[in-house]
Amino acid sequence: MVNYISLLTLLSPRKQQNPLFFTEIFLLIPISQFLTKIFLNMRHIQYSIFVTL
Image 1 (cartoon, rainbow, N blue to C red):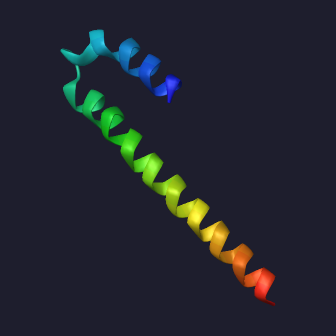
Image 2: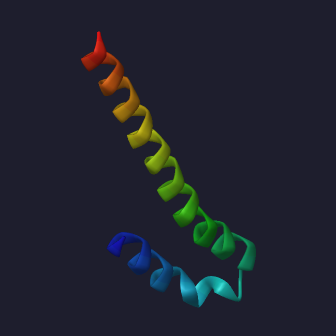
Image 3: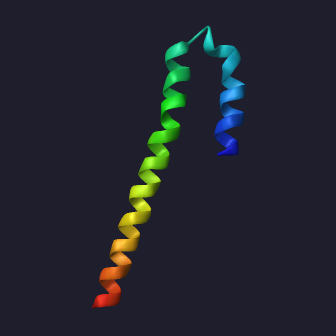
């Protein structure tokens, strides 16, 4: 999470030059968090299946 914040602060001066790029980075944060949550849930499901077998 700290990496994202530092990345955003680094890119904030460039916001005027390329606003689309900045918004893409900004949108990547919740998307990546969502994907990691799904991935962890999948691993948990696989583990529970393995335990039942």
